[in-house]
Amino acid sequence: MGLKVETLKINGVDKQFPAGLPQTLAQMLKQLGINEATVVAEIDGKIIERQNFAQTKVSNSQSIELIRFAGGG
Amino acid sequence: MDKLIIAGRSFNSRLLVGTGKFASSGLMAEAIARSGTEIVTVALRRVDIENENDDILSAIDRSRYLLLPNTSGARDAEEAVRLAKLARAATGINWVKLEVTPDPYYLLPDPVETLKAAEVLVKDNFVVLPYINADPVLAKKLEDAGVATVMPLASPIGSNQGLKTRAALEIIIEQANVPVVVDAGLGLPSHAADAMEMGADAVLVNTAIATANDPPAMAEAFKLAVEAGRIAYKSGPPAAGRKASASSPLTGFLREDSAEVADAPKLWRRSAASFPAKADE
Image (tube, rainbow over the protein chains, first blue to last red):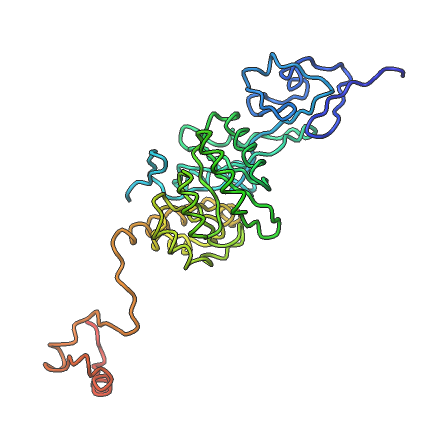
């Protein structure tokens, strides 16, 4: 194909975005179909506040962690 | 029942409920409601981006229940602090059930890392509720570090073994100046009642409710047991003794002069033959 597949490292795995790499965290969540109100994000070990999701740039050099609540005791 | 006060906040229920292991969110919500609890614990996990699933928070009415995020999965202080901060970022809640369990078989809490993490989190304005082994010295050190409660285990998490740490729990309860929440291993309502009768301020139950055949009914059973245990403790239970102490009067019925308690064995021999057929009327 000759085209480079765009990827982001999310939760330790390389996730492909064939339609093109999202520019911001908010766009990334939207493309993944994840409601941003239900997750916390960490980029390179730094917590990103939810109100900053729309301004936070993402790139494939980063390590992105997406975390949410689950059942627990 | 008197109110439970943790970090200046008061609660009508002395039962904390965990949200793990329920077969469905609906069952969990029903069990939480029947339990009467006002504090529910939740864990933090990585989002599975390939299999989008429901967010557990949508099943918990946060106007009714205080969400208490735990740091389960943390193997050292650093990971626990990270999880606590993530939970705070997610919810705005600064309460955290501190849990550091490096051992996957018994899930016993690491006392050194737990104390280390508690010190960091207290300085960062968290309300810290640490899960600990039933170690009275550790409980005091955590209290000195400024934690809001101590949460000693009854037996290993999810083991349903009941109060295996009884003697140490009694010392912790005797010495604590913060609420003592007995956590982990309570498998039956009677275990919870037992802990409350000993003077525990509250208990946390998850597995015993979530994995019962009928979780909402079991949640109610725990609610009643916790209330009964607390009321019993507050009512001042009498001490246990080795000998009998008659509940019915021994005088004034068969023999005017038969109440020689010091002579009890002889009394029994004499009266055995003369018991009336209908003893109680």
